[in-house]
Length: 296
Image (cartoon, rainbow, N blue to C red; front, top):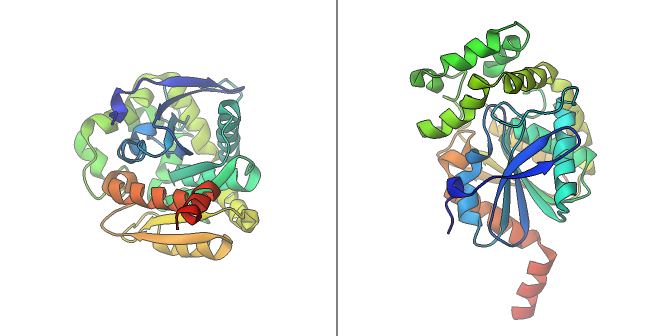
């Protein structure tokens, strides 16, 4: 089994951006979407566990921890990011994709499901922005840093102090257990050291608003593929009630409560999440269902 962090990055060139990604394993494709100020390493423990049965494709999306800046003038709104995800799937020629998302990435995934569903076979949402919770209240000050010259630079430099990373307005309410320092260092270093990364991040922050998630919610009933809502029951940032609301809208949704975890389920409960994803993909894969019937 290959260790995630030892796998070299590959690149996909889109019209508006170059996306770095890691790939491990073979089998039905799973593509992961992280959130703001994190990158693909958020999914490292989950992808390592799924690589024995699935092709895990783990990009670094331009959400504040990316090293490949996007083209000037690119659409960095949430809908623009959804188009990038769809374009990424197109370039790799992926079909029947399981899209797995967390945090801000879950809002983007909802827009992929409503606007670009063609290559999706199923959707997995872990705790994420939804409805009128985009951004969650404790993170809204981040949007002000995007509007004041130099403020975002000061904010990310302050997070060189490790104790500040456990504050409620940073990563403190997202993970129940401490995230390894070298992982968070990797999330923050691009914005701390690259003007272009901060520029992209500020543009995305300025474009965030509940109009995007409310519009997606109003159209999610049209997404008729299987959906798994693998949601943390203790999450104070992305309330469990939102999983129930999403399940009431999505025609083929299943809720899987996850105990002993905050919103970063890939950090707090990677083994449980990987198990849920594997079982969900197998149960909703027509080929797998046919094989089970043949052997029964």
